[in-house]
Image (cartoon, rainbow, N blue to C red; front, side, top):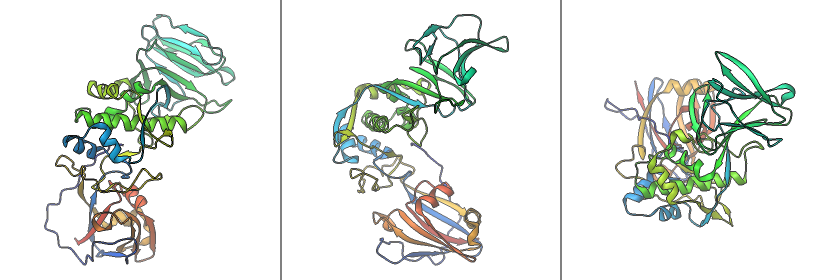
Length: 400
């Protein structure tokens, strides 16, 4: 969830054309930004991400002001309570989508049959790879690569796994090699399927060691990194209680939270995980839904639960935050190509905002006023389809 894009520098004087009042609330009339026939559209925005829950740049700003990790968490998730969670988590490894789980040999590497419970130490037989794949009758088989050829070693009764007595295992994916703690399982998404998902199963806090440095710079203030550890552990605990599928509980991308395994670990992030061992936030006795994003832009936005509140964020705007306020220039034709139904873009009409902060806050809805047709879209759709950092936006159109 910690993503950055470089803002486009503006190197020419701007002549703003017909920009109307720039402050609007949901109850007020639409704000209209006229667009000339041949124009640039300069978009100024605040923040990076959905704005729900903790601002990661805000956590660093708060830590620089002396707040503890728990104080940071209490600010961004008001009404939640401290709790604890341990156990194992199962993570879908999305980069490994070829229906095989291939690993490098190492000391102590074992293959396990998850149905029969059998386990076998894999021999040092000159193999350069070991693989779990679909075998006869859709069950799994173990094979090894030697001298350029694959050889079947054992057919399992069910799905299989590789383990190495707690030591990291190197997974070979189509996009590269990554080391993981715990077990690497090759699992059917449904009974009888000939497809396989690679799933990493490991202790929750070991999982966090591969998340925290991918979500926040480990070199930031210890209190900020510890707050990230608590938020990420709580998010994982929530997903463990609401699993994505029968084969795994959580994924390893920004759709969940970014996880890079043992290969991504950093001593400072590991220290933050250890310092907050087991710590989560709860709501109603259950793990809270602790969403977070890179930058709030100065206001967090209301989420799907009552502790994800819209509130002014005094910590986000410190000097080291490059996405608190940003500007990007788009050619109006890019908007026209993205929504071709409109024809020539004549104006952008913002019809609804959330009412918080400059310009009336994040855009809920806008209309692209075109020569052929008008198109009504959400601020989220406008942001995602144009690759913008947030939906908290204002516009200025300039003739070319």
